[in-house]
Length: 428
Image 1 (spheres, rainbow, N blue to C red):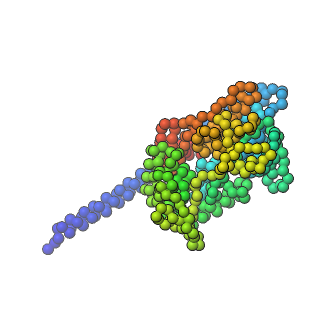
Image 2 (cartoon, helix red, strand yellow):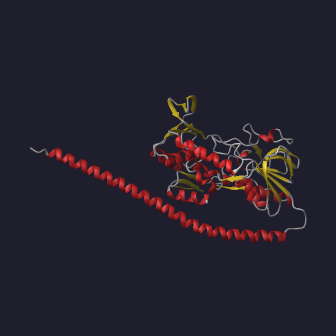
Image 3 (cartoon, rainbow, N blue to C red):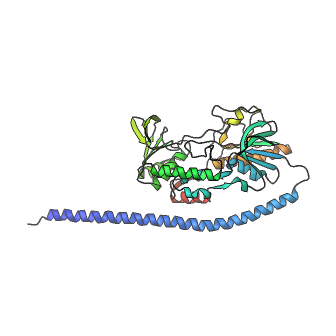
C-alpha cells in the first residue's frame, strides 16, 4: 500500500525547497538591482559634479585675477603652515590670495584619509584618493620635516638633505595631524606617492592571505575597516572588539549604532562589546588575545584605538609650547596656541581648552576657516571669533562597504543606500 503521509511530507519538502530557491533568487535579483541603481546614480551624479567642477574652476580663476588687480602695493604678510592635510590645505586655499603662504609637510602627497580603508581590499584605487602636493598653485610647498620653531621662523629638514633650512613667518599655523597604528596612516618610510602605493599593495596582500582578522576598536575607523574586509572577503573570520557597550559610543547617533551593529552581524562579523583585548602571545603568525572570558585567535590584527598628535618636534622647540600628556597642543577658543599671539593650531593635533570635539577632516576645515578669519582680524584690529563645536562640526558619513553606510546631517540620520551614495559624492 502506498503511504499518503510520506507522499505529503515529500511534497511539502519539495515545496519548501522551491520556496527557498525562489527566495534566494529574489534576494539575488534585489541585490543586482541595488548595485545597478547605485552605479547609475553615481554615473549621473558624476556628470553633474564634473560640470559643476568646471564652473567652480572658472570662478576661482576669475577670483584670483581680481585679487591680483585689487592687491595693495604694501608687502604681503607671510604665513607658514606645518601640515598638508585637511586643516592645512584649507588654510592655504583661504589665505593664498592675500598672503605669501608656505606649506611644510614630510610627505609629498595629500591622501583622502576617510576613504583609504578601501585600499586594503582594492589598492588600485590609490590614485583616486590622493594627489601630489607639488601641484598646489599659489603656495610654496616644502617637502620636509619640521624640526624646530623659533620666534618668527621654522626650521625644517628637506627630504633627502641633512641640512636644515629656515622659513620665516608673520603667522604660523600648526596643522600637524596625528599618526595611526598598523599602517592605516603612512609610516616614516612612505614619504612619497610611490612608496605609499607600494605600502598599500603590500597591506592588501596581507589581508587577502589572512584567514582570520581581529579589529580592536569599535570607533568609525574600526567599523569601516571590518565592513570593507567582510564585504570583499565574506568567508573570512572577522572579529571586532570594543570596550564600550556600543559601536561608535561617543561618535554616532543611536540609529547609526543600531544599523552598524545589525549590518555587521548579518555578515557574520563577531562583535564583542564591553570587553578589553588583552594580548596573550603568539604561535607563529597567529596571535592570541583574551577578550572577557573568551580566547580570540587571529593572524591579522588592526589596532584602531585613535592616533597620537605628531607634535614631537614641539617638545624640544626653542619656543615653549603648552602640550598635554598625550602630546596635543592646548589652544584657546580662538584656536590660538596658549601664550602666543601669532601661532594658531587646527585639526587632530589640538586640544581646545574646555571644549570637546571630534577628530574629523571636515572639523579641521571648519577650524581652518575660523583661524583664517582670526588672522585677518588680528591685522585689522578687529575682535577675534570664538570656536564653538556645532552640529556641522559633528556631521559624519560612515561607510559600510561600497553599497551601504550611515550619515548624520544636523539632527537627521540616514542609513543604507543613500548614505553610500553621499559618501561616494564626497570622495569624488
